[in-house]
Image 1: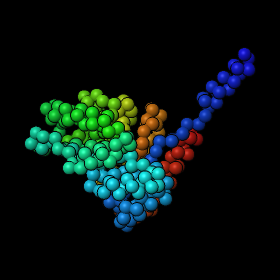
Image 2 (image 1 turned 90 degrees about the vertical axis):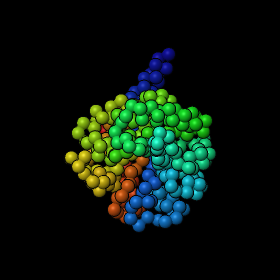
Image 3 (image 1 turned 180 degrees about the vertical axis):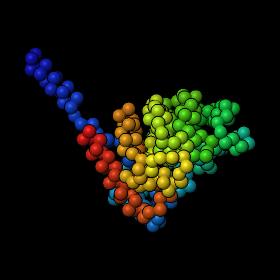
Image 4 (image 1 turned 45 degrees about the vertical axis):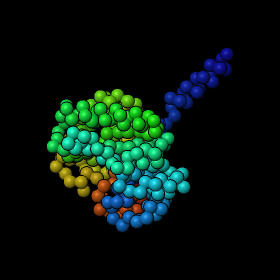
Length: 289
């Protein structure tokens, strides 16, 4: 009996003293191959570049050839964790891309996240009546997500109908389905809501988060900054992205991180290499705390 107690004590002590790990997957956004400089042109070459640098996956976009992208990723046993998709309210009707059903069929059973950036004609700010229309559609889509075993999330985006974390969270709560959540996008948080008090702005979001996007950025009056300051390779800029990641991880976030790359005017391979080095340094710093 005493030996058993000693064993249990040692196991418990080991668990309590074992280092924490930043073991969340990191993948590269699809825009790393569409908006940076000197990107490989072919899908096989793009996927090979991502794989060679150690990323766990490569994101999709409704406008690219998702069949060939998935095929190349599958061949390397890499994931396609997220697809960026627009949803629009036009003349009172919610409109999805023409290839919506094809995307569902292609990614059935994969748990791929369809990240929805939300638009509404003639509505620049949240409106209760517009929200009700979207929520009704989102509930329908959540049932599709259940059937096809995929995930859905509202993607708050600067200057779109849903641009704040609070509005996204409100929509998610109204939908009330476990397959329907939201993303947290650092660049849009900084642009729309500012950097001051960001900890309070993300408080309580963990249960709803399906993906968090990260990158380098400058600190300061971020609402007045352009995307060249707000989106940089990970590890660059004066904003403490490590503390942002650390805070989310410490408060329970276990989901995926996506590397935002939009418009970075640097060589594609070099920017991705630097970002992966920064991510690995984040992992080391997190473990050594």
